[in-house]
Image (cartoon, rainbow, N blue to C red; front, side, top):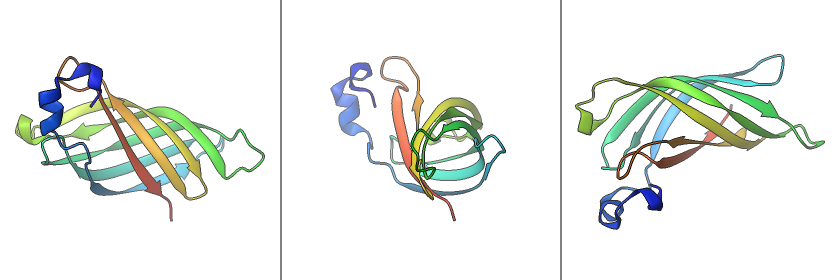
Length: 129
């Protein structure tokens, strides 16, 4: 939760170390860009389960001689559901960014919002088998 966008009393009550699990299917296209279908569930700000599933795409750059190192920038489009919204399906369209080496990728997004709502940086590790 972005500190400039929240009252301290709210962030003190929030779960800011969510954990979860997910799975997906990834592909690299002929241009070297990443495509993925995924499902995951994690503990949200209120420590309640939040599922999300969707499609992700990233334009991928390999700026070093070592092609195992890569940077990515793209988007995800999917559907999530939250406890505090009665688990009604909610469409999402969010930015994606990543840094990876070999089968491991640190991927992240930012959920925009207003004061005391949204403005959340969310990141996860992705391992490809």
